[in-house]
Length: 120
Image (cartoon, rainbow, N blue to C red; front, side, top):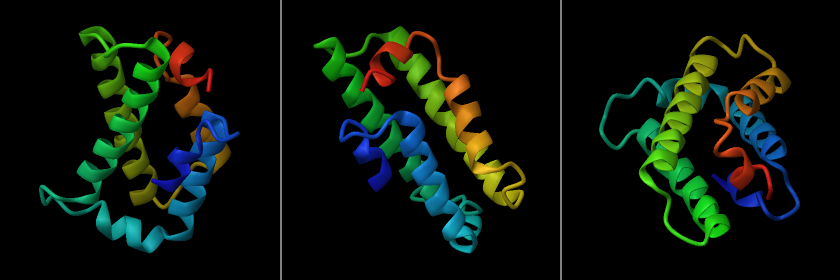
């Protein structure tokens, strides 16, 4: 997503998440229908792939080498959880305000990933 590419360009993780959720909010009807698809090439899988690869690239850049299996597990868990909660948020008609969603996603970021993702 475009908002995630803004990390490192003067935007923090929280700012980027806020932009992402504002965009989803502005296109609520589209995302509500798109997230209902179970097709292999659905938006959920695409979103996961993009976010995972994006974070992985940032972590590897900060580490100077490929992520190990522990960091990769934590990253996959965080990405899958954040996407599942995004879907839940959309399908339940955005019952939590965006600032709270962003704060909660920041709060559940695994501690071992913080130095790589929050230092941007």
